[in-house]
Image 1 (cartoon, rainbow, N blue to C red):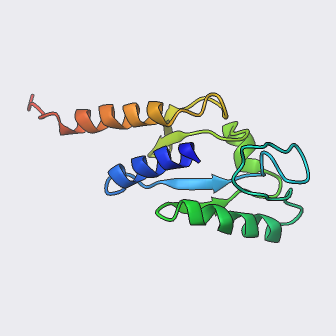
Image 2 (tube, rainbow, N blue to C red; image 1 turned 180 degrees about the vertical axis):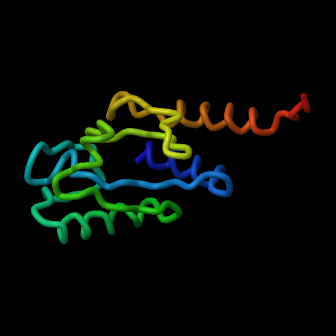
Length: 130
């Protein structure tokens, strides 16, 4: 829950300048699979797209200011971006500008915050005509 809170604070700070998108992939710790004791939710493994939609609706309640889309049941986005099971990216004009580490240990909202602060500061620098 602390991660989402840090992420929500980041969204609140930058939502005017940045489009945030959550891609909901397969459940990392389904209640009928590899269970973890620190999960705030009890979500079974997705066996259909309808299952994934239902689980995403629960997630959306915790991140209401972010757009949320679902990965395919073949998990093509997760595979393409190596997201097993959490990862942060900044994509600008089709180019990956920032790629965070793989979660859970490499998922560092503070790194993304630092990147956004540097980017914001760079955008604010006066441009000198040449």
